[in-house]
Image (cartoon, rainbow, N blue to C red; front, side, top):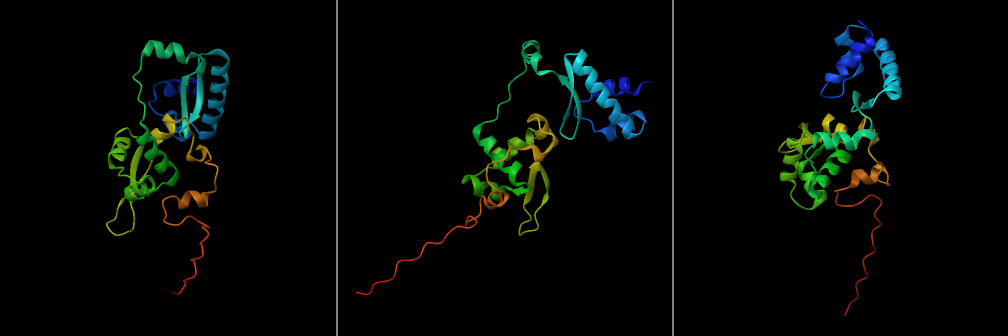
Length: 191
């Protein structure tokens, strides 16, 4: 059995991106052999197929090349699953501040976010990561592999830069922004 053909078969049936380690275990060969074969498979698909091998969400997946998206969409007629503005706000806060509690999300948004958070958990874009060591032990939320997959990211490091430093991002939702100048109080006058 050819490692290259075995990889192609496994990636064809995989529902989610598969790591090199998972593929090596399934085939029973060393990881370096899988990585070499993945490189060859990617090159072959690039030159001879309407499919491509992509590295996404920490693994590998076979997908259609972008130039065939319209015809595939027309054939499959998938339902569009757009996220509302409020869901996108909650998702962005979770993605950039994770792990984050619901009350921290509410503080940033200024409104309750429990419904939006519940919807994102149901869509498997957000999940519970554990509990915060604080009174009440609130649930901590973070993004999932599905989030990376949907937004075509290999890791969270691929999130777009927001244009300001990490310290400013960490300060979102706090009462005083970092390096906030204090205004002098007017001198009291006596009458």
